[in-house]
Length: 97
Length: 272
Image (cartoon, rainbow over all chains, first blue to last red):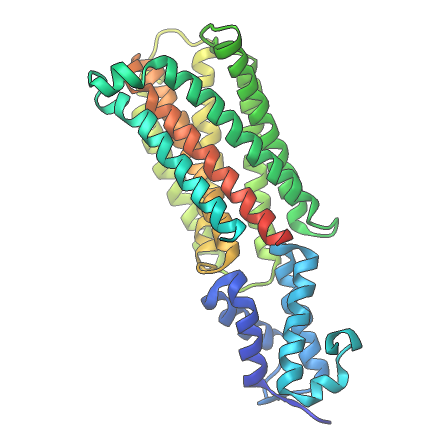
C-alpha cells in the first residue's frame, strides 16, 4: 500500500493547528495524537492519516465548534493533497475541487 | 482593518477611558481634575452606563457563542451557564441603573441587584469548572492533574489569606446581619471562581500564541478583576472609605470589559 511521510503530515497538521492553539500546543498535540494512534514508523497509510485528521478535529471542535473543526480538517487534507499524491487518491471529491 | 483589530482598539480605548475617569478621584481626590471635572455625578453616570453596556455586550456575545457549539459539544453547557450568568449580571446592573440614574437615589445594599449578582456568580463558578472539564476532554496534552490541583490549592490558600486579612473588620464586627453576610458571600464566591480561573489560566498558558488563548486570557482576567472588585467593595464598605470607591468601579468596569472581549473573541473564532 502507498504511504505518506510522517514528517510531512506532522508539519502540515502543526501548521494548520498553530493559529488556533499556538505553536507549542500544535506540536505537542500532533505528536500526542500520533502516539495515541500507535503510529511508530516513518510513513503513514491513508487510513492512518484520516484517523489523525479526525482526532485533531475532534479535539479542536471543543474550542472552535464543529464547523471550524471541519474547515481545519479539510485544510489539512488540501495541504496534504498538494504534496502527497496518495492522499489525493483517497480524498473526498469536494476536497479536491 | 479587521473586525478583530477594531474590537481590540475599542476594548483598550474603553479601558483607558475607565482609568482616566476613576483613577484621579481615587489617588488625588482634592485635585482640580477630581473636583471640577470628574465629579461624583460624572463618575456615577459614566460608571453605571458603561458597566451596563459592557455587560450587555458580554451577554450578547456569550449567547451567540453558545449557539455556535453543537448539542454534543462538551463546551456548550459551560457556555450556556456563562451566558446565563452574564445575563443575570446585566439584570443586576439594570436594577442599579434604575436606582442611581432613574430614581436618582443611592442604591440600597442589599437590594434586588445583589440577588442577580449572587446568582450570576454561582453560574460563573460552575461554568468555569465545566470549562476545565471540557479542556480535559479535548484530548490535548495538558499539565499533569496533580500539578493542576496543586495550582488550585495554592491559589485558594493565597486568596483565603488575602480575604482574611482585608475582611478582618467584617469578621470582627459586633453586628452580623444580611449586609455582613453579603460582605462575606461575595468574596467566598470569588474564591470559588478564583480557583477554576487560576486552573484555566495555567491550562490555557500552553495555548499561548493561538486564538483560543486570547479568549481565556480575557475571561480569566475578567474573573480575577471581579474578585478584586468584590474584595475592595467589602473592605471599603466596612472601613467606610468612600474616597477609594472609584477603584471599586474601575475594577468592576474593567472586569466586565474583559468578559465582553473574551466572549467576543470566542464569537469571532466561531463565525469569522
